Image 1 (spheres, rainbow, N blue to C red):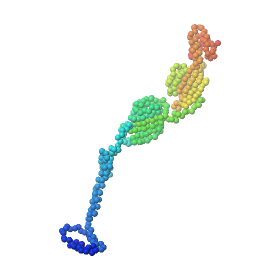
Image 2 (cartoon, one colour):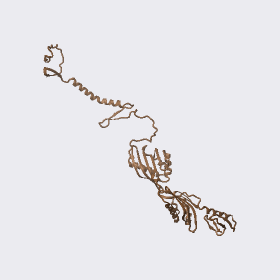
Image 3 (cartoon, helix red, strand yellow):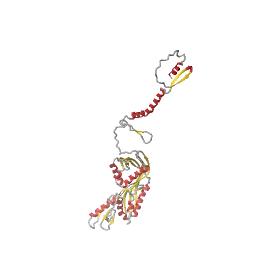
Image 4 (cartoon, rainbow, N blue to C red):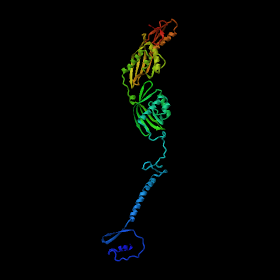
Length: 429
């Protein structure tokens, strides 16, 4: 085989070499099989199988295949591991590899905040719109207990109450409880008339119009906003704002002077029933009666009715002789002189003042002041004083200015009754 190889190397174009001296034979191992390719100009090119170029490509491909995952892992470690905690790759049940990461410590802020936490917050606590509306029902049920502390417990630790009838914001438990002391005395029952609900992440809002019915049957509407927050495992009232209906507050009810004068006719008709309660029902909840023949001011419905028990026994019938009417926004005034005729035919005059206010959809007597005519009263007192100072069976001549400076004689015989109820005999010269 060696000799054949020597012969092949002798076939060389003359242009490239002129002589060829074969080297001395050297023992060598058998070379790898070669292919001889004939090319033009009698050139011979040798090509061996499994060249070094093919081997290098195969090795590079293997290194890239095995080293790529390692480079990816090292890159993740170098990029995200700037803090104290390292990233630990986890393999879920599926074939997809997922890495759970924590934010580096350099990202978290260490600045202190003045805000206080409202409790332990559980992320994404689910709640439906109906469940939000039911939170109002829980608050309404707390009202029925008539216990201010029970109602106040429905509010969050940092809850805020802006109440309907108080200018003072309530920002703690004691302040909220204090407001409901007065409100619960009316025994309210609440009902939502209309409202919209919006749900956020661990908070919800319910805003609209609600109405309260009180023990005396009266009703009042108001606007409301409830903001609920999930605190310590419970939904609590974080913010509660309640306000009067603005149009109902500022809009006056139209009334004429004739209608105001008609209120006296309604009161006079109640006198004709002989029922003190029907008369007292025409007075407002906070009405005041300063009666003609009683030193006691009457501030309640029962006390007002008590006065008319005795007055109605005389079966009075009233008539306004003169008066002046003044109108205001949801109030009116009628003041002047009226006269009463009693069953026995006697008459008496008095001065009157009525103040009417529009309450709970109807006009009521807010203030009623009645007094005797002062000049006859002074004259009567002079008569009584003269009578008490005169001896038995004697006549005393007294000059009075009522009604026309007439001179009267007082004696103890033939008694009559004047406006004060004193028994005297008056003889006019």
